[in-house]
Length: 173
Image 1 (cartoon, helix red, strand yellow):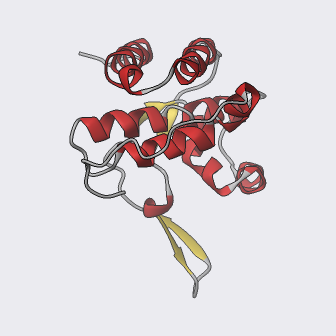
Image 2 (cartoon, helix red, strand yellow):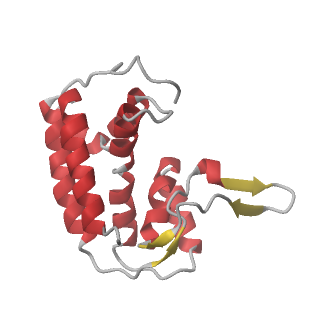
């Protein structure tokens, strides 16, 4: 069977509602609900699917200082999908970095490419928090801190204090 974008979205929503909502406050839940509306709409934006790495982040990027060459490793999550997925983790390095990489990107681009990649980047903390609850070697706190960072504009608009130190039972970050 084929796992569709709609299936992945439905699983993300269901898992978040079932496992994360009980650990979050009402404002955090509302922020995530608003994000899901935006993500659903973003998933419906037209784009061309291409071969993508699907897990492109610092641990999979190896810089050869002698040759000034970037090497990418671990293509185990590769797939045929929106190339904006491969930019999702790059936002951790800042807007300027993403803009520079995008300017050098030779693949097909469209006006909503970077917008979609930023939307995709906001899914990651939800996956990390749920993964911690499922026993993956990350902590809920790590995912929660990522959530606060990636949703800071929305969180900042709420003018509330968010909890810290949610997880003491998981292993490492």
